[in-house]
Image (tube, rainbow, N blue to C red; front, top):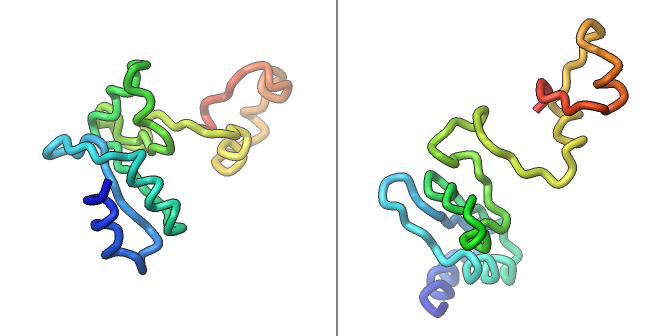
Length: 119
């Protein structure tokens, strides 16, 4: 932990910290829990690049590694082919929706189905 503190001490003025789990070239994994605590203590935004090996978090025994992680690079896919975890799906859907009248139907209006065209 002292190495991590020394690292961030030099970046005090920055309000964003970067870390990674499974970088594409070297599969480097940073100590996320420790680094996130340090970033929080300095009131910094903390970004974790999940790259390709975050897909290991599919396994329950590795899920402690995924707190706050952007999973858009799982299995080396593009953003538009990937998984997003959202707390409130209605906010995401409303921001991306285009609902012309000819695509409306009873099931969608009643929220009886998940209409993935807006995701």
